[in-house]
Length: 180
Image (cartoon, rainbow, N blue to C red; front, side):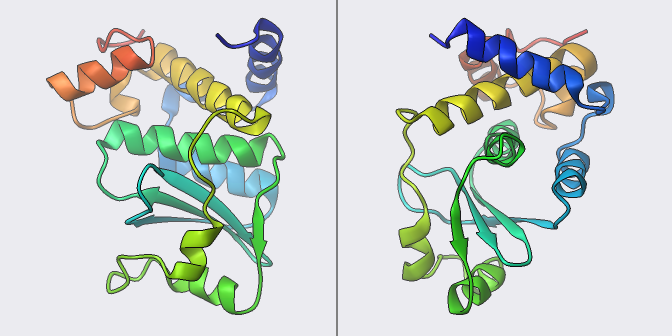
């Protein structure tokens, strides 16, 4: 169960943003976060280590969000929102420079479907035991609820109402119908 003061604090944070969730689109939201942070965010699908769905790595010039290239679209949006939440909350991540920065930049090339061993070692294991993970997961879920309420399910996914989508949305505490 999420601490109510954490939830209240994060809802106040969302309310303070000048972002129109009724027009939510993950690419636009990512661009909004990048503008807010004052540096580019590059989103890159790739095959990640087992039990890892996403990761954020910071270089001298940009932020890199990596996500598993196989999940349902709504799960992809959730993964990206989780990583963007780390950025919005001012969390710390691995900072790369030099050769690793070049590796991060090149990792999204189609011919490089597997991250290099050096990049693989940088990704944190999934687990919500530490405070940053709990905060990021809570914020990403609150953002999804806000989008669901103001823009409906279509803003979170283009997959529709199939059984996989209903199951995923129920796991987030939503019924899988249209928000409103």
